[in-house]
Length: 188
Image (cartoon, rainbow, N blue to C red; front, top):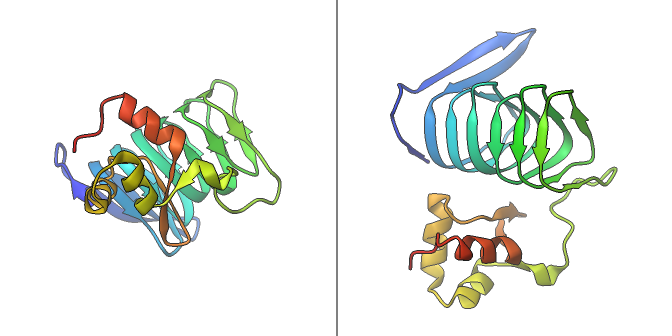
């Protein structure tokens, strides 16, 4: 994970009603992944990819530009990116979400803004519901973009490539890759 230090990184454990919360007040860039459940609250800026287990809370002053996967996510701040949730997504009254959402449960307070598509399927706990032809592995993506697999892996590691991790394998949605290329983000 790359961290840009515009402000001093503040990470603190906080006890709230017998619940430990990892509070992050920083500007960060890259990929952040938690394999074990954690209660994480982000109050700063984050850009890249975020994969969490447990509860993710995005504070009112947070500015996030990332695709996010998690179990339980609540948003109070700004998020630009797609979100996949296995349990519940909560949008507070100050939430501003620009991206597609997949969740089995959604709670939205009056005042929240969501721009994107919502896909809800009760009891669903796996990734996006897409035809396999819409999804590509790293190998397939490298062939599709006509670049070396190492370059695709480098983009994934730096967090600039829009993809999701499913069963320890990176998967890429063809339409998102086409959009990424059209926006001129590809630099071979």
